[in-house]
Amino acid sequence: MAPTILWIGLGNMGRGMCKNVIEKADHDSPVLLYNRTKQRSVDFSAQFAAEKTEIVDSVAAGVARADIIFTILAKDDVVERIADEILAAGDVTGKLFVECSTIHPDTTVRLAKRFHDRGAEFVAGPVFGAPAMAEVGQLVGVLAGPEASVQKARQYYKGVMAKGEIDMSGQPYEKALQLKLIGNTFILNMVEQLSEGLVLAEKSGLGTRYVHDFVENILPGPYAAYSTRILSGAYHRMSYPLFPVDLALKDARHALSLAEASGVQMKNLEVANAHLVDVKEHDGEKGDIAGIYGAVRKESGLKYENN
Image 1 (cartoon, one colour):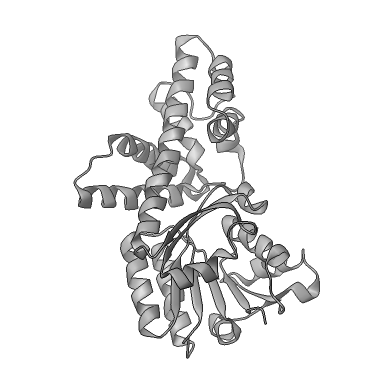
Image 2 (image 1 turned 180 degrees about the vertical axis):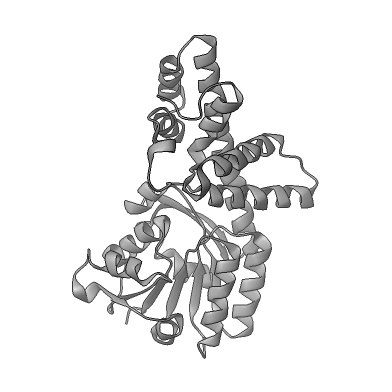
């Protein structure tokens, strides 16, 4: 009999990931949904046939019925609060917890120990990709933990939520989050480099069109997508951020903490982080990572907003 799944967290990424689990994974019973803001669960559930999902009113109610619990949440303290609720729900012996959030490696180690001490299985399973990629099952998963537990979790990654996997079976949990944080610095530095190049093109009189043409031809994929997003002005027009500045700042903070503990300087990331602070100051919680372009424009004597 297929396991019962509880999904906790229906933010931008969580919705797309859960959608693919509902539509593609093997489960006989409805996928149980919990989000602290219940309306998100209601709105999300409405897109599926009634028998495909069921909204639960509390973490405890969902955990009592579930065999596998996925969590993808915004910040470390939120993840740890949900873990408190899960472990207070009762017996979790034999249940599998798959933690997909981008959190500090030390947080993951603490969580894993707490679940193991209660007889549960735990997998660190963060993902790479944007919400649009999550929607169409094109993420890349990173899975670490005991081999048997990772194998149970893998059935929900490649071919369901993900197009590929980085399999860290048997490796310590923290390695998945170390990779996730280092990988996210590539994204932050990419947006910083694009922003600096595009602003220089504008200020020097070259114009941004030719830089964008260069990016499309030489650096297709994420670089070209971010260049389009930047130049469209979406970073200051969108009503809800695709990659919220608060999450980008959290990722940068964790990566810089990891670097400091390892005796490494990440000067590129320090520059990007300073610009993210400017984005937060200008746009508040609605700020997006692409707003780095606006911050570079502003410090270069241009308006934060482009035309």
